[in-house]
Structures are given as structure tokens and as C-alpha cells.
Length: 362
Image (cartoon, rainbow, N blue to C red; front, side, top):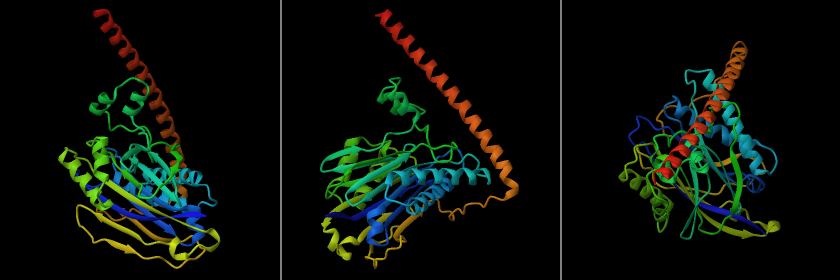
């Protein structure tokens, strides 16, 4: 016996007070064929272009396209290995295009979820997050790769300090920043009926408490939940780009030997809201089964309002220069890491000194 998932999906984007949207997201709904579905499942991606470095919208668009392309082209059934390969491919793609264009230094976060049958996998770099809502319990599935998160983990900063820090948006891992990428990728758990998955950017969760997220995800359709959370974040003062993708899962069980094509390729319902328009809900009907791993249903959206960015072809005459620049960039990255470690040691010593002064003053 096997499980197959039917999805109801809502997604909402809001540009906030930024001049343009730098979040991009991809919804990859089922490759063609029962075997391909069982091997790869459905892929969901949210990417948040790093503002302040230039080209964040380009980086996020490149990342979601690269991740989906490599994930489904990877051979075998190992989801975690395929996700790591997809992140590496996306990182190389962004770096190469950054060096060969006027978008030097562009980078993006990314969080991915794969639902294969009743299995949930998550991978991410940066501070875009994944949550799972089961019943009335909200579980955070990712840990931020950020300066303040590391400070809290090392006991150098409290949660309250982190929320109020002017460095709370400084991330320590991203696609496009370093030549080598280290995504966190793992199997999370087996899903249950009516579980809800939330993928979102920091513009949303930064101004919402956990209980507000949990409340917003309940007793609403996925689309209504997304709209409610974005509206609440705006009322709470969010000024950043926001993205919320909410996936509700319905599971059905069937016998492998007599699996019905219709049950394995159930209708997917998707609706979304953007700042520019509000399309009607779409119903994606089942597709005829085939053993070729082509993509049956997908949604890839870049809300920057710009044309999709085409990867640049690397010419032979530029290869030597690109390699030299990559080497120089790697060396500078190592120097930056060393300085960051020294700074952390100094901050720790300073905090210890302040604590000792406080103790002696009491």
C-alpha cells in the first residue's frame, strides 16, 4: 500500500514598502507518470532575493528555476541528495551569472519542501522559513542561517535581543554568496490528513508571533489564511517584501499493484493573490499518465515585474577571468569569516566582562 497526496494551495505576495519585489517562488506540482510521482513527489520553493547587494530579484528567479530543473533531472529516488545537488547547481548558476553581468554580489535565500506520498522533506539556506501546522500545533521546521540566530545559539544574545538587533537581517548562508553552499536538507516526518505547510519570507514572520501564525492558519482556506497573515503583518508594521505559500495536504491510500491512475493524479487546486492582480482560482485537472519524467503542472512566478532573467553563456575568453575572480572571491570570503570569528570572540569577552562588572557591583 502507498499514499498519494492531493493539495490545496494558496499563495500571497506583497511588495511592502520596497521599490520592487525581490521574492520569487516556484510551485512544482507533480511530474508526469505514477513512477515519477512516487520517485520525486511535488516540489515547492520560496526564494527571497537579498536586498542591498543588487540583483536580488534576478538571483531569486535564477535560483527557483535552477532548483526545479536540477531536482527533477537528478537520477534515483534519494530526495535529500537531489535537493542538495539542486542547491549546488543553483549556487553555481547565480555566481556565474553574477560574475558575467552587472549584478555582482547578487544572492538569495531559498527554502524548499518536497511532498512524496506522505513523506515531507525540507531544505533551506538563509532565513526564509518552513512551518508545519498539525491540528492546533505549529512546528517550525527550519533554523535561520543568520547572524542573530547564531548569536542566540552560542548564548551571546537572548531571543529578545535578537528581535531588536539592527543586524537581525544579516544572513550567514545564501545562494550566490560563497563558492561552496551548505544547505540544511532532511526528512522531517510523515504527513497526516489536513496538515498544512507554510513557506514564507522574513517580511512575514518578523512581525508575527508564533501564536499569530498558528491562529491565522486555522479555520480558513489556504488562500484565506495567506491573505489574513499578510494583512496582519502589514498592520503589525512590516515594510519588507512578503511571500506566503500554504499547502494543505489530503492523503489517500491505494494498493500498489492496482493503483488507479485517477487517484494517483488527483486534482490540484491553486489560488493566489499578488499586489498587482487577483486571479480567480484555477483547477488543474489530472493528466494522462506516462513514464517520462516531464513536468505536468507547475507555477513559477517572479513578482519583480521584470522579464525572466536568462542565464548568460560563458565564453571561452572569459573563463580565465571568471576563474581568477572566483578564486579572489573565495579568498576574500575566508578573510571575512576570520574577521567575523575574531569579532565574535571579542563580543563574547566583552559580554563576560560586563557580566563580571555587574556581579561585582551587586
